[in-house]
Length: 355
Image (cartoon, rainbow, N blue to C red; front, side, top):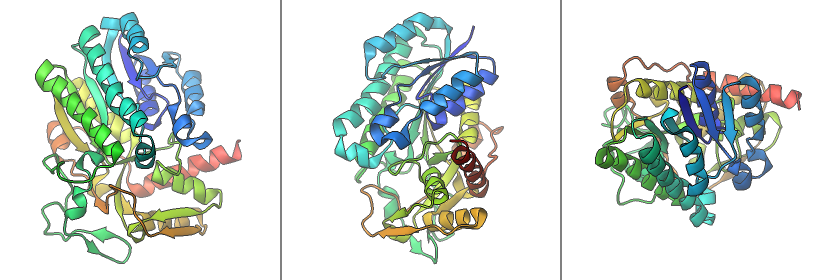
């Protein structure tokens, strides 16, 4: 029996990983206690995903465990021990706004929870790859210091700018504003690296851009494309916060991300970091996303413009995936932003009509 242990297993990336590795023949152990409902209210609940995972996968089992609780986590690691061949850590407090309002909870979930998992991996299954879902927010608001120019519907870089193809792993993380969420995830990112380079675990931090997909429980404070589609189809207002709604995000489908995990699992490295996102292949501004939704769904979206941006928010962020593609040339992206939005509209409409 080969066990994949996945934290945040009912979230967007975690649930995609559960389905993927169940199909690969793993016995999948999920760790998820639906903290998103605590963070974001009823709209953020992932209980519906957990129920679907249990129904569709006979080789999946979920533990209602909080990653901040070392003793309860240890019981799971001790039970499966050497049978664990892979750890995928996706559980997190993912919101800038929530992190600012509740910094102790934010740090304990994102930082202490990650440290707990690394220590238990070292103790019970030290030869198993440890995959951590980090974030591009480790770079704080440093990308805002680039020479960004305003266009009609987006902020952009000139083509001769060294970062036009995207931000790579050598981009600075210091001397900037991160947000409390960014700080807690940066700690986790660095400690994952340290357990690779200092302890010798096969660890990787994937510094993701905007990740999305049909299992995203989009809420106001997290999951912009999913939340945009949900608000639009329910004929509710969508808020454009700061930068005239022209801020640029790259968008990576959770399917494409989990395929990165698979490539790393087959050929792991120690203490590695990869920027991973939609890149130049899949990106949009908020305004462009709204226009795409309106054109596909044939609706008009109500908009509210809020001038003050969120602290630490990026005006422009596109990922340079070159390092990962160099190390794992078999990885290919399947979804661009238009295809992602089409799928979100289809699945959101189905949920709406079947509730």
